[in-house]
Image 1 (tube, rainbow, N blue to C red):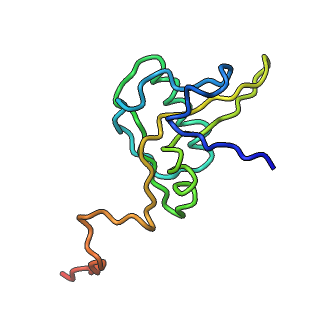
Image 2 (image 1 turned 90 degrees about the horizontal axis):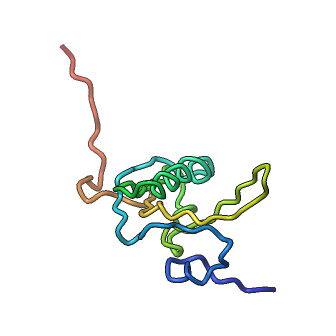
Length: 128
């Protein structure tokens, strides 16, 4: 079995030259977008669109993705610091590219903001 190294920011320069990668400095990319849900649609379309926009004009548009159901995506992407690869197919052929705009990954079931109390406050209707 071939053991492959995980994708990681420290290894981007060592990737094959035909593999597209972020053209901007990820270390300078602040979070400016919070997206609820880190499913395949978001990663394959919305984050790719954001990546294209960043390539055209760098701005504060890093994504904080919040998984509302499970920590599985976060657990897979965290060791890669949010980097992942997308395969694109067109009439001219196929290409692989690394998406780098995902800067922070949270999981709602396991991440509790510090301002939220440990026990929920029951809501009640007031009677008039």
